[in-house]
Amino acid sequence: MKALCWHGTEDVRIDTVPDPQIVDPTDVIIRVTSTAICGSDLHLYGGLMPTMKAGDVLGHEPMGEVIEVGSAVRKLQVGDRIVVPFTISCGHCEFCEQTLFALCDNTNPNAEMAAKVMGQSPAGLLGYSHMLGGYAGGQAEYLRVPHADVGALKITSGLPDEKVLFLSDIFPTGYMAAENAEIQPGDTVAIWGCGPVGQFTIQSAWMLGAGRVIAIDYVQERLDMARTYGKAEVINFDKEDVYERLMEMTNGRLPDCCIDAVGTEAHGAGTFDAVVDMAKELMHVATDRPHVLREIIYCCRKGGNLSIPGVYISHLDAIPFGPAMNKGLTMKMGQTHVPRYYDKLLPKIESGEIDPSFVVTHRLPLDEAPDAYKMFREKKDGYIKVVLNP
Image 1: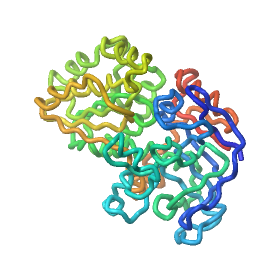
Image 2: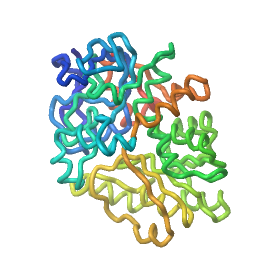
Image 3: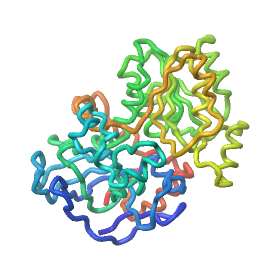
Image 4: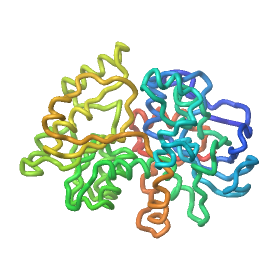
């Protein structure tokens, strides 16, 4: 089959690789009908994530048609359409039983490798390094789906792929980000990053009762999408000082909730800390650029809530932890417990309350994925969300 494979920093290629096979009786194999490029895939593309190997198949936002079923699978059969979450969860460990699916104890075969870096291992993830399981990803013609009865979401309606595909990651991720912010009715919520996760965080903040939503970015197409589809007030950090503008907009109170939907590769409009971060990254003495994390600490009101769906890779420098402690901020973060949100979000799509396809800016065949990664990383040609059709 054809698959998009990682071969090094900014080097991804369409390779011919062996078709996936049933390995465990809880597996299914799907023919991938749609798969997307996620902003966190760019961390792999940029060479920031350790333990990648040449030939690794990328992608963690797929869906498709079941073509083969393992002997222990009970909920799925050949011909079913399913959305596949990026988290791989066993369904019966202590964490899965609490619906903390991204913390599953049993799905990372390289748990010892992860524990050396993190203290304990999270769940295995599709297409996201050997430290997180070494699983082949979904930017391919076919995909093995482990523990399919636990994670896969069967689509029984005639909804097209683009309306449900993002239940694999970014819609639940945006919703969990808003949930983690513990938004109270009428709260002012500020969201850094208007990429796809940021867009769904904006939508979710309204769903959870926000009174105002303020979106922060520097890419005009993203700001326009946040304003048009998200009904958000916007700040272009290339043109305005974010802290000063937020003070002005809130009459000196600052937002109740601040959400970092950017993560490790933050830009900072030439601010001193952002320049230092980039220099450290170029010198290979740091992997992360946590400008946004610093900024949300300064920009959140006393006693407010911070939510961090943005992916970070390693240890972070110069985090203003003293200000966070003295302002009494609450901070929540983590990979998304995707299946927890199916019952909340799928009905919103089926009822027409939200059409997630609004984020899609480019639809391309799988063969064009290498160029799409380059354009997406460089934020050219209006690239916000790319859907690939193998």
